[in-house]
Length: 293
Image (tube, rainbow, N blue to C red; front, side, top):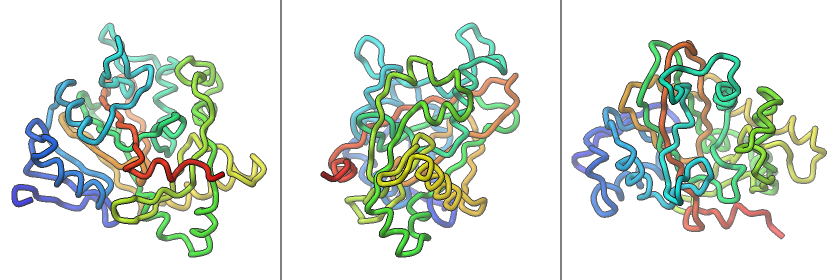
């Protein structure tokens, strides 16, 4: 650990990690130290990395399998996602009424990635390639710290609940046209425990997302209101770390313990972030998140 220096990003979570070139990281070299920081702090920032697609994927694979999702695949091989971009293949940008830009704006709701998938994400490795002159920050809060601030009674209540997740639920809150996009409509509903316990250190986190639409044992309308109340409670201004991107920045966060959202920017300017998500496994606590019989 001698070559690694860390600086807190927020009093409750997150560290800026210096002294590492991610190109040099392997399973036996530096990754164990990075994984320990990940488990402890939930959000890691590595500046000035400038990873190509192959290097980005190789680093992501150290955490586990690259997410099996149709828009991440081509000819059966995992690919970096360019889904967090308003740039067109022709070199322009989406118009402000383009449905693809509306889909990006749905990411401006507080969310956890991939809760709507049959296997949710453990990690997102997100890198900045092109940044606008202003705006476009990504904001984060710790759902571990948020859970810890709840009363003992509320924590006990949440440990006995499950949340139902639907991709189209978050998209419908932005524009009903998004609901019928193939990449959104193709996923069936999922159900996960409301609290994710980290098997490494025993820390518990509220596992919630903009995709969550119902709560076990509640009427759907009441459950949706309860979900909104919980999200509001853990995302107060003092709880937020806002990251203002520079090209080459890489952020790695624990999807079990962090919520995030995008923020607006001048949409006539290009902004491209590239990512890969890594699927959670039983070693990460996945099996304990399934609904109990």
